[in-house]
Amino acid sequence: MDNPEINNIVENAIPITMPVAVILQKQPAKSKWIDYQWEAISVIPGTHEGEQQFRPIHEEGDTGQYIFSGLTVTLHKDECESYYHNLMSPEPSCYVAARFDDAGQPIPFLITLDFDEAHAYLEGDETVYAVTIPPEFYRWIEAYVIANYFPVKRKKRKRDNWKNAQAKRPDIL
Image (cartoon, rainbow, N blue to C red; front, side, top):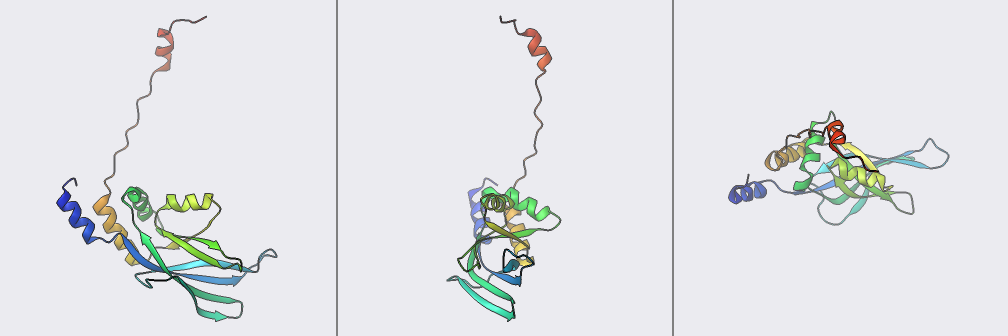
């Protein structure tokens, strides 16, 4: 799609950002080293634009569910191949990267649909939760990938015959 007019129409038709909120769940840990175990259980698209907020949804004893709002997912053309592979996987996922504050509460700072980006944060010792993609996200990413991703057929390179190359080389002493 090298036609600038068509590219412009496609880019304007599919938004590249979407506001989101994350639902986190806290449970008592079965470990003597930590008190609570946190888990991201859902990502809610199209909600809670604006300032980041951490609010309780439901609390009962030591367990609870909380909503963290004010985050945005941004799609990038150079990550389309990763989005494509994510969509084609048996269980497409959103990845929530979080850091823990001094009280041991996770503070999400990034929602991505790019496995490679999520993996980079894991290698950097950040906490990354995988959450099943909501249907709205799936349709949004699918439309973006269809408009922007053009798979390139990979070619296997032809290897040099090292036996012939060695036979033609003069002996060096």
